[in-house]
Length: 172
Image (tube, rainbow, N blue to C red; front, side, top):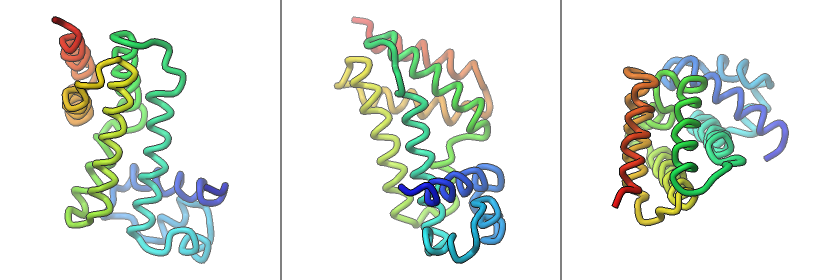
């Protein structure tokens, strides 16, 4: 991804976080991207492409935040992953998952639905490998989804619950 494409994607991501997916006009998105309308459309020819670019950028940032330099393996890795997800929610997504918000705004968009599935599957798969419980990807996915979906209502209490549920994956 070029510097310009990355800058556009980062600006679009922040605009969608701030304004949601229905509200911002293309001019607002252009301002957030910090480029001319011509450049915006060169890199993202449609509004759908703008949303996808923003979410793909967010996906890369999320993976780096959650898995970058993970210090442990096993239960310690999983506890750290949950702490990092909670930190992400507090700092980057206090109103909930941006991927789910995008799909909710355009439920018939198959590209968005596939990106959501890919994002969630990759997070669960990487976490399962890091924790050494490759056969528990679905369990991890449910724990992480519960955490991210309940964060806006329960904050750190949701993270504490996720930690307790994660510990049970290693029992027995």
